[in-house]
Image 1: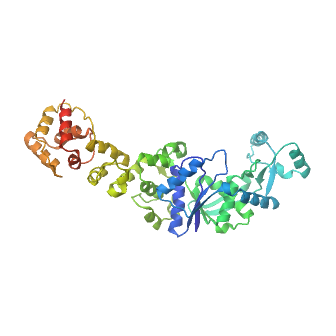
Image 2 (image 1 turned 180 degrees about the vertical axis):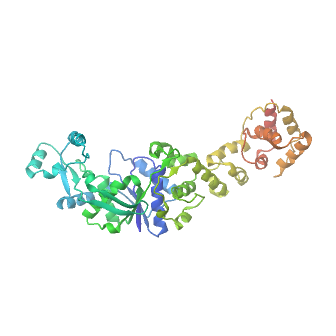
Image 3 (image 1 turned 90 degrees about the vertical axis):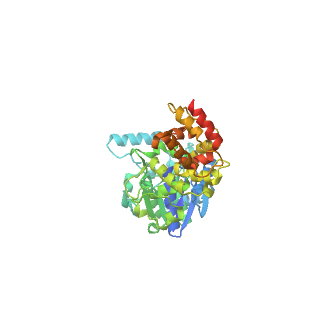
Length: 443
């Protein structure tokens, strides 16, 4: 089994890209196959080297290691050879119409209530007409003549699929400047690298029909290739996620503090009947099956991802996050705050609370209580149960209990309405800071 992830380096990976990459990776690892990274970078006007670097970095961060990689820009001679083979077989033919002429044809067909497919006029071009066009300075681009009939396959996710090729215009495979296009280069590479399974988004169904026809024209056996098309993600409101992917780039989620294992665990189960739970990649691969995916578009809900991220953080040992915590953070600090974090970046704020300088708000109407709290604040050294000792003394001296007892203290000591257990925070804050903040909050 051999699978590939083939991004175009025209931007950062977003969650839709990552879901396809993850499905290919997990299926390969599940069955002991190979996972190939291919950069579809023949469009020199849009591709940027820095995006290729970013994609590699993001995949590495996720833990998706690849067995081999290459760039299509290094294989232009192979595409040219494949184009010559198709031309010799009468399947690739030159075209000279301008975009203005093509649009006029499409408009005319629409007025006649006909589908706006290409009319194959250039198939009737005589050698003399071609020579005249080239003598006049025109350079041809090249279309692939689709077969009659239909392309059909058994899709692992969508079931039986069939596309009538007569409903599709003969695709352009090579531009006038000689640049080969994705529809063509992808097939050439899949044949050359022995790809056995193609897993990608449902928006590629028509591409699959065309590429199967090219596959056969180049001598490939359709029976050697399996397809799975994943329904596209939608937002939590049911709208297209593709319109909002700027805020859902993998790089953005990473910078916001979402854990890699939360992203992979969430996307691997999204669209199945299984609830996402904290799970590392090897565990996800053990029983990964594409047949578990629904044919309906799954809803990507950032709140669900953050809830899962919270669970992941709660289970991480100090050693797993030490290098990403503020300098000086200790295991005791991590144990105190991790149960209250949605994202790791929030740990910075709690480090300021326990080890930095904050200005708590004035707790209105609580001056007398806070003065009593300061008066009864135990002397150091403090033991881990100092919070219980102190609040028990306050309960006895003031008669307060529950929220009336704890809430003013939390506000004065942390400046926050809620957060980690004070039992864990207070020993880290220390008596000097606690005393200063109790004094400020009385004013």
